[in-house]
Length: 76
Image (cartoon, rainbow, N blue to C red; front, side, top):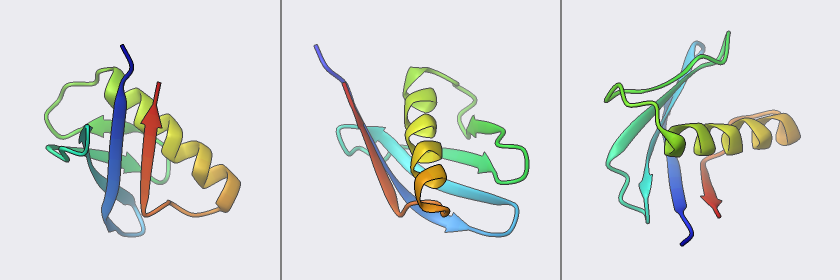
């Protein structure tokens, strides 16, 4: 069975960017990425596969485009 994690950017400042994310467009969690050292965390303290996968997708897009995307989708 596949998995789909979606994210949408909610805030960005000079130090960090925040995304609402979740399975199947639920957007029930918050991902925080430190823009200086790329430390990534979920506000709920649960660093699971969903966090890792969507963070990797966001970082890949950032590398390609040079900015944090307004949203991202990871599907497997």
